[in-house]
Amino acid sequence: MKNTPLHRLASYSYQVAHIRVQLGMTAMRKQCPQVFENTGFARVCKNFCASRLIPIKRNLVSGMLKGTVVVMLLSAMAVADGSCSDNILKSTTLNRQVPWTNARANAGQWYFGIYGNSPEFSGHYLDQGSEKTNFDLNNSLYMDTEKTGYGLHMEYSGSRFAFSVDYGIQDYTGNNRLERQVEINNIIFVPGMDVTSSLKNTAFDINGTIKLLRGAQAWLGVDVGIQAWYMDLVASGVHTFLPIAPAEANKSIVVSIPQIGISGNFQGLQNRLVINGRAHFMALKGASSNRFSADARYFFLHWLGGRVFWEQQNHDEPYDSMHKNIEQKYERKGIGFGVVARW
Image (cartoon, rainbow, N blue to C red; front, side):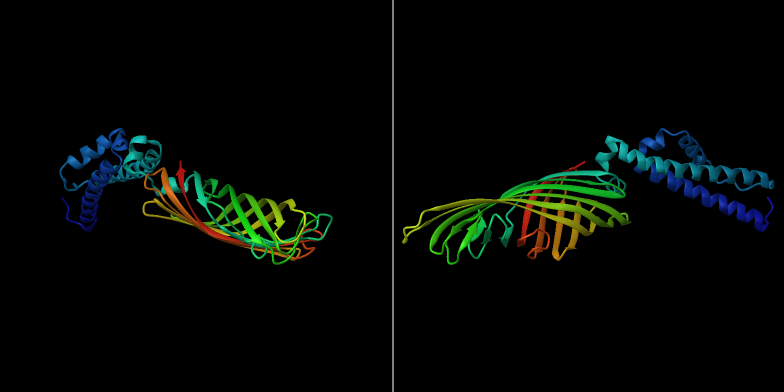
């Protein structure tokens, strides 16, 4: 054997490649046994690593052939590694070994959840049109949460876009002796009346997200959507001291709020922890709205977890801004809990 620098370099490269193939075989055998055992080059790898480190002979053609074999083996391992990633996602057996991978988290995911919350709700409404109305939910009717409301949440999160749909119902009740006049749908409730009232707020929320910045465990995007409140108010009052006829009235109010803003997502703890955040703003025809929310989910199973979320929202429509002869302003905030499934 010639002891030239070229021969020594070829021999050294061959030995390093031998070690790399051995390490690669060990890693693949542990991570993807099905792919490793069922591919044709696995047998070649085993035979190659079982051979002794034969020195490079005088003819460099032998060394070149062995180098070519090494390159082919390493290239085949890279292809098999990609097949291994796909196999993890498609194989039920391997999914049990690796409950949730980053590759799966970045693919399309569906979420469905049920939640309960009791948000505080305050505000006032003024209508100087044909159905004259003037009331304040807190200062005049003393509205408060009657019981925990419930809702449904559905969400899809893909690699480039996402959307969510929420539906919830919340009931509020009030019982107060009026200190100021209240008018609901042309029915006047005079000061001194004992008024019992109830408000049912049915909320719909549809939101779409375009993911602008995407990473392995996080993304940041732009939101566009709409939120709608359908409120049904019922009130009845009697005067204890004055001979005034009892009063009863009801009023239906629809509030539509465009949603424009930003949102972000982070996944950690092997994708068992999922955190979402949103900030929405709206300014149109003098009206303004802002909404901030945070949502944390922990999946104790890869498909089932618990959820806690917080939300604060303000909506302000000055007189004659969005609707003729109408002024309304609301504030809504609170926390909620629920369960959520994903697949």
